[in-house]
Length: 296
Image (cartoon, rainbow, N blue to C red; front, top):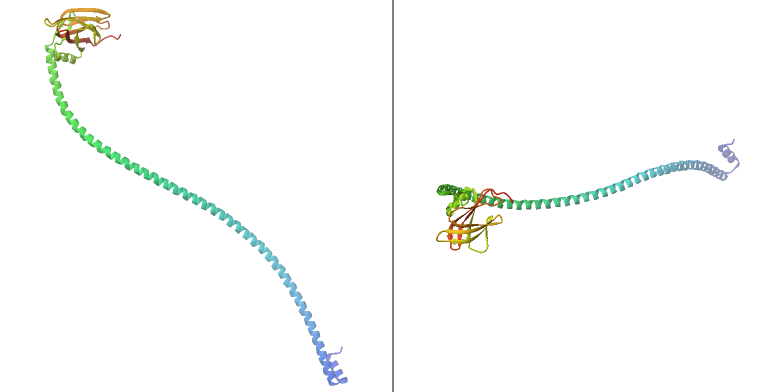
């Protein structure tokens, strides 16, 4: 095979110098063109490989990007849900906290109001109790004084009672017992108010005083109905009519301080009428009734 040198040498023998220069230039151009073509092909192949690699890398990157995007989308969605749930919980918690705060404030206000009312009530009660205590102290002091005064009075009354008892005993010792108009031995006879008080002090009988005028209508004295028929002031004698057991009994010409005796159906002991004073158309005395009387 002929080389470029052989061609150039052969051409130099047959061609002139200009032709050789032109041929040399043409050969150089051809060779350069071949080189360029070869280099271009190499570059195109390199570019093709590079494009393929880039395409593959781009596809891989796209796949990775899509996977990351999906992953990030899931993460973001999860975060969004978490944020929403957290927001709802936070809002609910805020609402609960607000309600709790409102309820706590209302309870605190109510408690403070009740405490103020209780404090005011306690103060009022304290004032009332203080006033009552002061009144009680004053009353106690007054009672102490009254007790001391009463004690003094009791001592005085005791002395008076002892004196009265002695006087009653002396009066009773002076009283006399007589037989009544029915032949029954009478108890002690009182001739005046002092002696009658002494008899009442004994408590053996009930004593009812009377001032009986002369009338046409019977008068009720205790359990007895009686009517004055006649009174003799000069002779101290009188006549009286008694209505007992649905019967009229006349006690005629009786003397003063004489026991006029009669029975009632429910009595075991006789009743006694004692006239202490005879006046004109009037007698004054008392009715002595037994303590024990059967019920009707």
